[in-house]
Image (tube, rainbow, N blue to C red; front, top):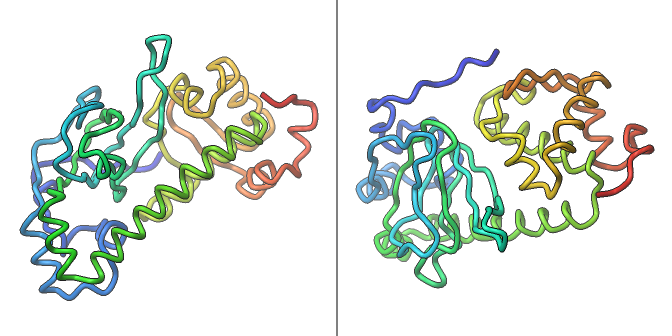
Length: 252
């Protein structure tokens, strides 16, 4: 199994210049002096535990948040009193960008496990961005990435089969863990099967059946939330619709 980093207050207090995630959430090309200036506005508080909300829908917007350890789920209420999962967020990723326009959060964010974040007060970030072109460029890049992810999600739900959706989901986490220096083929998924199904637009029974089928096909090994991807090339083939595992399955 993959060794997981333990959250501690010492880790939480690490400055930007020494943070292992700096290449993910900071713009390239900032001078050491600019990094120091950015670090002065960042707030690092206590860790959140599973089920703790970082913010709720309609809360007034004050800060963007960068996840430094753990994982977070964003969601909105749906018409039947449940929730619609909007995304799962890992260390190095920034949440809260959707609140900039209306000055309040349009969704809720909840910790899926013990999680630490850096809070970046937006008013101060705006002031710094006007003085640091590379920081302003990074903000544009982050906004563009969020728009792109929303487009990819709409495509995923609108056109892909159940098998393609799950394979895409697993490969997305594989790539994101790889970017963070972790194994791309051996990791933990902190969310439940129900949450995965909600996000992918699939029944929880379908998600469980697909995990079993993928395991029977030798694509992966799964034990509760621990996943080992055994055949990455074939998972990519499934995403492209060229693998035979999907031939006997109807679209959902």
